[in-house]
Image (tube, rainbow, N blue to C red; front, top):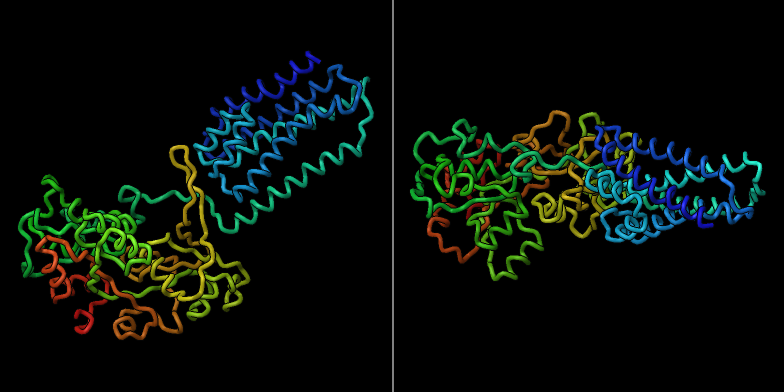
Length: 490
C-alpha cells in the first residue's frame, strides 16, 4: 500500500506539477497554445495511466479503481459546485477554492488566468485525470492479474461524472447567451476612447477642428481663468472647437497645465465624477443618469444643464441586414427580450444580438429613457482580464450580421464612420439633419454643457452664453450637430 501511495503521489501530484510548469512555456504560443497543452496533457496522462495499470496491485475492484477514479470525480464535482455558486462567472472568488484544491495544476491555473484562457483551469486537470483513467482501464484489462471490471459499477461512476458535466455545460451555455469573447479594449486616449481623438486635439497644429473667420467675441486670456472641459467621446470635437476658438495659446503643449489637461477627455462616467468633485468646470454630454444626479445631490451639488445643440438617438445594424426600419415598440420588444429573432420584424431567421452600453454612459442613459417603463433585458457581457483579475463588463458593439446597436448620430456618421453599418429609420423616419432640425425624427435629444451652480470661476457663465450664441452654434453645426432654435437656448 505504501508503494501504491508513492506511485499515486508521483502520478497525481508530481507529474501534473511538472506538466503545469511545461504549460507555462507552451501556453503563450500564439493561437495554438491552449490546444497544444491539452494535447500534451492528454497524451501524457494516457501513457501514465497505461503504465500504472501494468503494475501489480490490490486484487479488489475498489482497491484498484477508486484511487484513479476519485481525482476525476473531485475535479468535476468542484467545478460543478463552482459553476453553481458563481453562475458561470470565472472571476468569482469561489474559483480560488477550486484552483488551490487542485494545487498540482496551480502553475497552469495562474498562467491561464493571466492570459485570459480561464477555461483551461478546469480543462487541464479534467483532461489529465480522464485520460489517466482511460489509460489505466485499457492497461489493466490486458494484465494477467486483472479482476472483474464490474461494468455496472463503472457505468454508475461515469454516470455521476456525466451528470456533473451536464450541470457545468448547462450553466456555461446559459451564460454564453449573454457573454461574448473578450474584446481588445479601447485603443486610444489611455484606454478611454474607441476613436482616435488626436485629429481633434487643440494642441495638434494640424487638427481638423472648424475655425471662425474672425477672432471669437469671447477670449479667455489666462490659463487660470479657462474653464476645464471634459465629457463624452461624441462631444469631444465640439468642446475642443469651442476651446480652440476662445482660449488664448491653448495649442502650447509646454505650458502647465497643458492644453490637453484643460481640454481633457476621460469619457462620460469619469468626466461626470470629475465635474462633481470640482476637477472639471464644464461637462459635455447627454442628460445625467439617475445615479449621476444622485451622486451630485449626495455631494451637495446643484447641476445646471445648458442645452447647446441637438442630436438624434439612432439605431444601427450590419449593412447586410435586410431590415430598414423598426418601430419604437419593436425596439422596446427587442431590448426587453420579447422579440429575439430578426424574422419577427421582417428580417432573416437569425437570433438578434442586441448590444447595450455601460451604465451611466450618455447613450445608455438615453436608452433607458427611450425604454420608459419597459425593462431592459440583461446586457451582453464579456470577461476581461487585467493584472491577474477577471472582471465582467458590458460588451462593446461588434458588427456581426445579426447585431443591433445604438448611439448618437454624429458619433456613427461623422466621428466614427463605418460603411459596414447602416442607420435604420425609426417609426418610418430617417435620422437626417432635416428631420432632426424639424423635429420629425421621433427621438431627438439635447447635447448639454453641464455645470455646478456654485462654480466660482467667472468665465463659466460667459462661456455658456457664447456656446449658445451665433459663433458657438456655427462651430457646432460645422462639426455635424444640429444647432438650437432660438426658443431652445432660453
